[in-house]
Image (tube, rainbow, N blue to C red; front, side, top):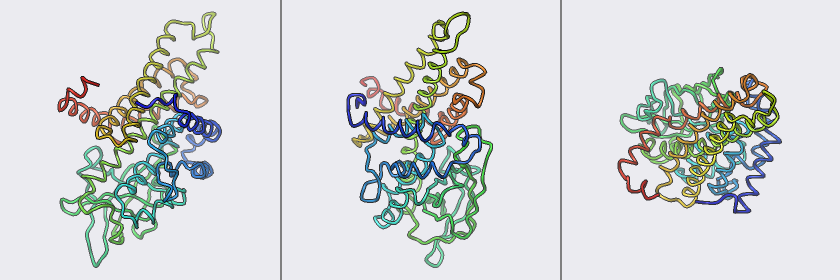
Amino acid sequence: MVRIEQDSCYKAQRQAFRTFADTEIVPIAEQYDSEQVFPDALLKKMAAEGLLGATIPTEFGGRGWDQVIAGLMHEEIGRACSSARSLLTVHLSLVSETVLRWGTYQQKAQWLPLLATGQKIAAFCLTEPEAGSDAKSVAATYEKRDGKIILNGKKRWTTFGQLADVYLVFARNADKISAFLVDRHTAGVEVTPVQGMLGTRASMIAHVTFSNCEIPEDALLGKEGFGFISIVNTALDNGRFSVALGSLGILKSCLQHSMEHASRRRQFGTFLKDHQLIKLKVTDMIAEAKAAGMLCYNAAYLRKEKQTNALIQTSLAKYYAAAAANRAAKEAVQILGALGCSEQSAVQRCFRDAKIMEIIEGSAEMQQVLISDYGFTDLSAIMED
C-alpha cells in the first residue's frame, strides 16, 4: 500500500488541497449549505485550481493526476464540505472519467476540454421513480427514428442537475440499456429543482424529465446495449471511490472538531479531554480514521496500478468509510452537546451529510452483497491479505 506521508509529492498535494479547502470552502460552507445553492464563485475557483479536470489527461485540458492524488483531493474537499465534494463526484468521477473510458476520440475531444475546465458542468441521470439500487430496471426509453435518437423518461434525485449543462442519461430499447450524452438545452428537457434534503444540501439536486428529446446518434456513449454492463458499472465504481474518500474527510472533520472542543471545554472542574468517556470516544474515532484511511488509499493505489482487485477494494473502502463517518458524526454531536446540534457548528452538517454517504453510489446494503459474495467466492484472498 502507498505510504502517503512518506512521499513528498503526495504530501505537497495534500497540503495544497487542504489550504484551498480551508481558505475557500470552510469559511462559507455553513452559509451556502443553509441557502441550498452552490456558489458560482466557488465553482469557478475549483475549476481554476484544476479540480474539475483532476484525473483528465492534459491532452484534453485536465491535470492528469493519478488516483492517489485524486483520493487526496476528494478527502480534503470532503473534509471541508460534502456538497463541494459531490460536485467532483458527479462531474468528474461519474461523468468525465466515464467519457474518458468509453467515449470515442471525437466525444472526448468535444466534451472533456469543456468539462475539465468547468466551461460545462455534467450530471449523472440513472435513478428513476422505480429504479435506484436496481439499476437494470430503468424505464426511460429511446428509439431510433430518421437518423436520430428519441429519448423519453423521468430521472430523479440528479445531483447538480439544476446546474448541469450536459447529462449522462441511461435509457432502454427493449432489453438493451444504453448511455447518451444529452445537452441540457435540447428541446424536451425539463429540470425541476429539489430542495429540503437531509444532507449535501447545496448539491442542487433536480428531477430531470426527457420528453421526446431528439438527440444525434453520435450522442451514444460506448456501444449500444453496453449502458448497464459496462458504463453504469464503470461510473458507479468511480463514484464509490470519491464517496469513500469524502467519507474519510467527514470522519476526520468530526475528529478534529471533537478534539478541539474537548481541549477547550471544561466540565466538572477539568477539560473534557481529561474525562475517560471522552477519551474512549476519541480513541474510537482515531482508530476508525486510520483504518478507513488504509482501506481508501489501498484502493487508490490499486486503481493507480490498474489492478484487477481494485473494484472490490473500492467497495470495501466505501462501505467501511461511510459507516465509520456515521459513527464518528454521532459521537461528535454527543461530545459537542447543544453546540453540535447548532448550525454554528460544522458537526451538525457532518452528521447530516454522513448519512447520505451510506446511500449514494451504491447503498450500504448493496456493498454488503458485493463484499460478501466476494468473500464466499474467494475466501483465500481475504485470509491471505
